[in-house]
Amino acid sequence: MTHLDAANNLARWLTRDAAAADDIVQDAMLRAYRAFDGFRGEDAKPWLLAIVRNCYRTTLDQKRRRAQVPLPDSETKGPEIVADDPDPEKAAISSNLSRRLDQLIATLPEEFRETLILREMEDLSYREIADVTGAPIGTVMSRLARARALLREKWIEGGAGDGLS
Image (tube, rainbow, N blue to C red; front, side, top):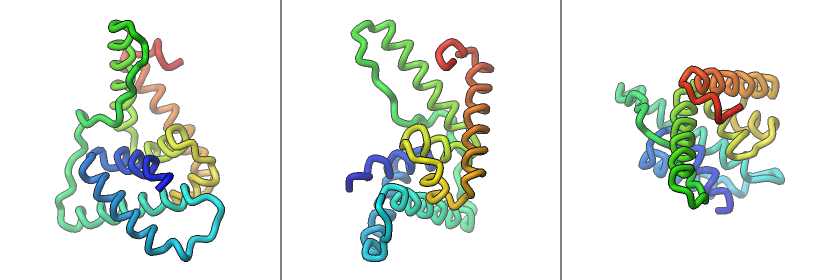
């Protein structure tokens, strides 16, 4: 239960849909509970996030088989960051920058987006990300570098280059 927020965060970024993310996390928690006796390791977070990722992939495969895969909605937002600053103008600017960053992250290809989320938002190590995604550690490192480069490029193209450098 201590990693439920991380599971929800990853599921929301993968699905871009709060209701679907809730379903995936519920399924993942059930699977994790059933498989907990077989867990061998020190940190359950990467293990649980791998289950969340696998549940997402299973759901995606099922939707593809039914030919009901929804197109990504560019207006769907991830979690918003609220500024503690009392100045409304600064708060509005900060909120706009956060919203813009969330939108840009959502446009990244899935393998880059998930690697970026696991590293930057969930603070997983390269090894843990490799365990979650099933990719070699070198692939994780190159995906992360490529995700950061794409994000930087999209940020600058969007005219918001002042806030990310």
